[in-house]
Image (cartoon, rainbow, N blue to C red):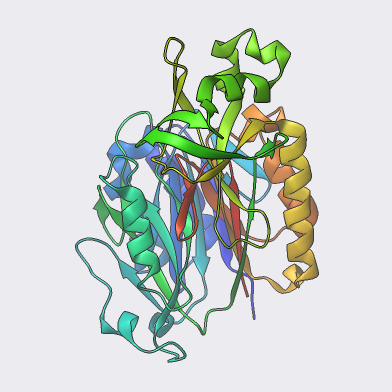
Length: 366
């Protein structure tokens, strides 16, 4: 089994990027993944048409990112395109969107080799109830597993699903004949202790463990940050533990408001009385350590046999978390070698049936 075909380039405009990528990819069949920086949004349709014409690859999926990723490299703040062609037979995948729904094979019984088993998903961050859309899509594939991310852009957000689209979800569903392995790495480290929500209204929390929410927050962040709450909310977040997880998994949500008078905290997701939360700190050292842990797990699971990879990383990671541009992808390359890999910096990362933040989601194809 051969490695997937990889291409990546930056240039003055979309033509430079497509010319360079098309030359690297050559011609052949398969499924194409394409990610481009937001400087190229106005030319998205031209990019798809040109890639199809120049490579002969009919099916393309992808989206826009503030930054895009390829093996060992990150492109940010410049016109850039990354592309990978997966050597998959047409019957083993189906491109879908709001305009092109999944066919009936998605509803076939689990174990049917023609059933949709896994999906790579790109989503509009402005879509209403995007978390519910993700959970619903998860229920349409036999394994329940999705990977992907929310588009990120300083202008418009668009997706590719054989055409350029906006809104909702799109992507590609794969049958169980396509072997994959996926892992998630956190970008925040938990602070000591967990707390129970005892009074709340949607995303506004009034009390933890029967005490004013802001008092508990101050105690949790430590004396230094408690004296500068404006700084505290930039680095301290709320973790929502995933019920039933045997790995201590949690979803990170921002603290989006503090009410000093009433001692309330507003966070980026609705909660209910009885929910458990933890506070966590965005931390480069722990992010690096956890990324190495994840890569070690994949290497132990046989990553040397992988043919290609997708990596979806939060816009707050990259140089912001790892100290310099390219450092995150260099760690991945050190562990996996020159494995063909593409992806983008997301406004939220999708893993299984959930939307995460400050994470990296890596998926290997075998």
